[in-house]
Amino acid sequence: MKIAIGLPAFNEEKNIGKIIAKLLEKSYSVIVCNDGSSDSTGLIAEKMGAVTINHKRNLGYGASIQSLFNKAKEENVDILVTFDSDGQHSIDDIEKVLKPILDDSADLVIGSRFLDKTIEKIPKYRKIGIKAITKLSSVGSNQNIQDSQSGFRGYNKTSLEKISPSDNGMGVSTEILIKANHSKLRIKEVPINISYEGNTSTHNPASHGASVILSTMKFISLEHPLKFYGIPGIILLTIGLFFIVWTLQEFSLSRKIITNIALIAIGTSVLGMVFMMTSIILYSMVSLVRERN
Image (cartoon, rainbow, N blue to C red):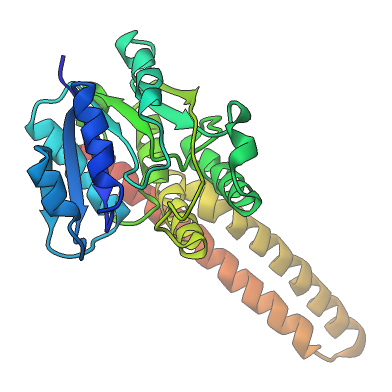
């Protein structure tokens, strides 16, 4: 069985060599995606014998995951484990992530920071942000996932074949969960240890959060268009109807149209109808594409 560890890397020359060395000691195959680094990340990976993918420019975390998936399939890998190259993850935890796949109890395994005492080590602002994004992700994936943004994941061959990531940014983690749920893949979480000592993360928390939220909303809207657009549409139409009745009542009593009430009535009604039409059109288009596939 061929097990590969995939490392998305951007300007990680300080950490990449130590990580690759430890992985090779464990006899794992190593695939590194050098995402347009301006330092020696790619050169170090190549010299140490890792299969190295070099992006000519920085394309984003999601693009790195796409490249790792494609290379894993090209190399006929049985299990791919994605592992952050910034020094936060523990190599000893790889066996925990692999176990459910090797036992055939899961197709996709997530190394979760929220299943044991690891949660105490996470900075408060990160904890709040991750939990908020995870709640939003759960809506789209229909899974009770505790840590939807963990980059420490294991994928069996079925997952690699059925999931084709397309998001270039940090939203790829949520996209994968939504697509895994759509493909009825078995998802399991296992506890992992994580280090937040020093300046390990290369992602700005604000831009990361915004990217994930926007991507999550995009994929939820495609996965559940009737709920995403239809429910707000019904609410807006209901509000519009209320203000229309109010406008007509005032007109019948005073023969005057109260402009503010009338404008709210028109605005919410039109917006509600737009949302309703969008939900129906998008649902029809998504259903048609799925039938053709």
